[in-house]
Length: 153
Image (cartoon, rainbow, N blue to C red; front, side, top):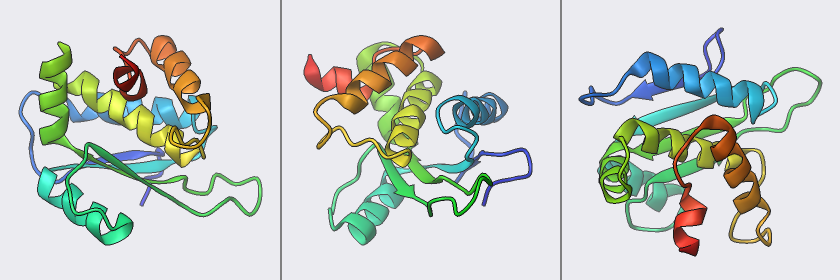
């Protein structure tokens, strides 16, 4: 559940070299700029939990890097919660190493990707709309290459 300050980032356990406050501030930046003020919650956890969530909600028995769970559409002008995101720190760490940047940057990339899904974009069905949006936001937020761009390489 979102805090009075807005979007939250919850860590299932302590992860070395991560700055929880910086990631929470980034989540609130995404809330303000990408999600148009709607808060979301982000869970940073491990592969086992991502696999369980993927199996339970999407019927896919494998771990993944990020999952998005949209919330309810707002009934009025209030900022109804956008939904939830779950990210595997283990996957983020491996991907960061592979692409030559810090795990914290990879978590930001995954968080952005998740929020874009929460606002209704879907790179599997939207003829490149999400890819273009992710690229624009990645540049604006000073992030390395995003998930969709990597698959296009």
